[in-house]
Length: 392
Image (tube, rainbow, N blue to C red; front, top):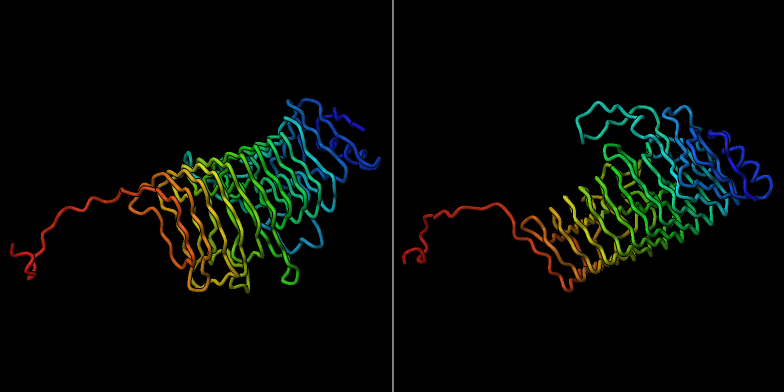
């Protein structure tokens, strides 16, 4: 059954969602217009349809949003905030569709009195995420534009069977932590035909441990035919205290941005308390990439002293690159990178090195034609020497 929302408020949307859920499910459709809103809680068997001309407009004050509470998640509060605009937990068969817009008015949460292009400083108050789903399955996000989230745009945690297609995520480049989609401990996620432009990472794979007893695995994530633009990273894989990220693929990706294209770094500043490193990344493929960046096209590394369970079997195939810095593969004595394949790599690095590799076991290069020919011009200088060569 379809439920039409005509009153322009988030409360009216919530009322329609509750009515549809009480009847066993249905489609909640917004009429064209602007719907100022605090937190909206979606439920099982609900499609929230936002047609062209309809905008869910997040309130610019944090106190207008409810805290996201769940017994299994309360120990984890990324960016010190539990607040979100659209939330869902322990549900199935939920979708957000249409050609309309969800706008978080992210800039209004920051002091914008900075020079053009300079990032806004983090405020002391909690900023809401736009979308937060936990332990849900059979999810669809299709066609909608997600504009200016004050915090992570999507946090999908412990979700299964997710399809995201033809969406647009556009975040102000001066906003910190406005990630595109954080895929945390999820399985069978497909993202396709979408466009991302963010100040922080566009696509992130995480396996955030909620407690030390419960394994977290992020796997079978497929991303294809997307365009990424980030001031930070296009694709990020994990943080050092995460659990397991494996069996994922990225293909047909265009990256344009001042940030790095593909990035997996494990620095000390991201370690959780009482942790010396834990993450394992394996069997990740990247194919058919076109990267233009002011930073690194690919950067995989780990700070010396951190001991991860492994970074292995990463395959990079058919890359066209134009970058300021080289491909960087830098493990450490405690975290050796293993079985890294670079095949069909071409382009140009604006520097004197095409690739740097340290603590790498079984690095394979095939059809590697990356040019690096720029560097400081060192003038000729004759040196006095006793060598016989100088006598002629």
